[in-house]
Image (cartoon, rainbow, N blue to C red):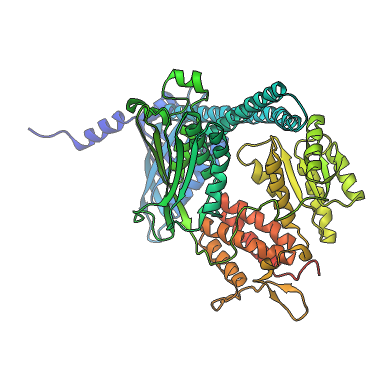
Length: 635
C-alpha cells in the first residue's frame, strides 16, 4: 500500500494549521495569494496575483512601516527569516490581526533576493487575549496605585492628629495633677501609642507585600544597639516585676553592617510580646554568631538572636500559625491581650529578607523561646571611623535659633513647647513663602520644614533656599518634618536637599536625633571634634585637603584616599553595599573639611545605590570626586 502523496500531506497540514501561503516574485513585485487567503481578506480576493503595493495598501497605516522594515532586514540578509504581526483589512471591512512568516528561497549571483515564500495566519484571538491581559494588568496596577495613595493619605491624616495627641499628652503629664488625672492621661497615651503601632504595622506589612520595603546598610555598634533595643521594654517589664537579662557573646564582633532599625523592630516586637504574655519570672535576650558560617562566606556573618520568656506559652499545634498575618494563638488572646497579629508576620518577612529565618520553641505554661537568624556584613573594627548613635552630650542644642515652618496650629504649639524644653529659640512660619521670607531676613541655625504647606511646599521652599545658597556657599541645616511615612518619603526629602527626616508623631528623642544629624552636616570647623580631623591632611597653606587617588593609584596609605579608592572600585563593580559603607565612612572627613556640596552629593550617591541606578552613579561620581577635592569652604 502506497503512502499518501507528499503534496497532499502538506496541503492538509497547511489547512489544519490555519495557514495561508503566499509567494512573492521580487523582480516583478507580484505576490501570489493562495486560496486559503479567502479566510483573511475575502473569498473573491484569494487565489490570484497581487502587486505588493496593493497588499501594502490594505495593511493598517500604523503597521505598514514596521512590515517594510521586517522585509528589508531579510532581503538584505541581516536576518534569515521574515516575521511580523500587523493588521490587514478583511473583506468585511474590519481590521484583522495576522502574523506573517517568510524566507528568501532564491538569490542571484550577487546575493540579491529574487523570491520569497511564506504564510500568514489569523492571530486576532491571541491579540485580543493579550490586549485583555494588558488591560487587566493596567487595571490592577491602577488599583494598587489607588490603594497606595489611599494608604498614604490615611497615614498622613492619622499621623497629624496623633502627633498632637501624643505630644500634648506628654506635656500634660509634666504638669501638676492628682493621681486620677494622671492615670487618665496614661491611658490616653497607651491608647494613642497602640494606634500608632497598629498604623506602623499596617504600613510595614503593605510595603513588604508590595516588595517596596527598603533596607539600610550602615555600620553599627552591636552591643550599644542591643542595649538600646532592649532598654524600653526592660522598663515595662520591671513595672510587672519581671527580670530582664541581656547576654551578648564575647566572640560577636563589635561592629556589623546592616539595618539596625529593622533589627530593632524585630527585637522590639519579640520583647513586647514577651512582656505582654509574661506575668511572673523573667525574660532573657541573647546574641551570638552562628557556629556554622559556611553558607554565608567570609565577609558575612550569620547572627543568632533569641528572646526567651517564662510566660503563658503556645500550644504546639498553634506555633506555625502565629507567623501568619492577622493570626494569634486563639481568639481569646486577642480579647485578653489585644493586638492585630501582624507583628510576628512582619518579623518573619523581615528576617527572610535578611537571609535568615525565625522559629519558636514553646510549651503552654512554661514559656516561649523565639529564635531568629539574620545575615549581616562584617567590617574591620580598625578600618576607618567607628559610628555609634549620638548621645545628648555629643551635640547640645541649647541656644539654637530655629525656624519652624508649620501650618497646623496644634502641631505648632507642640513643637514650640518641645523645642523650648530643649532650650531653643523658635520663630514660626505658617507657609513656605513666609519661611523663605523669614530665612532671608534673619540668621537661623536650623530649620524644621513641614513638607505639606500652603502657597509653597516644604520641598519647593528647600529648593529655593539651596539654589540661593549656591552663591554664598552657606548651608542651612534643614529637617523634614512630615506626616508622610510611606516607602520612599525619606529618600524624597533627602533628594530634595533636606539634611534629615523625622515623621510624625514626633517624639523629643526622634527630633533631637534628626536635628543633630542635620547639624553635623553643616557644623563649623571650629566646632568639629578633633578626632574627626585625625585622617585629614593639612596643606602648607593651612587649608584642609582630602587626598584623592590618581588614575592608577599606588596603594593609598591615608584612610581618606583608601576610602575614595574603595568607593570608585565599588561603583565600577556595581557593589551597592560597598558604596554605602564607603560613603558612610567618608562623611566625617567631608564634614571636617566643610565640604557641604560633597556631602549633599554623597546623599544622592547613597540614594542611587539603594535604588541600584548604576548609570546615575557612574555619571554622578566624577562630580562628587571634584567637590571632595575642593579646599576647605570655611577658610
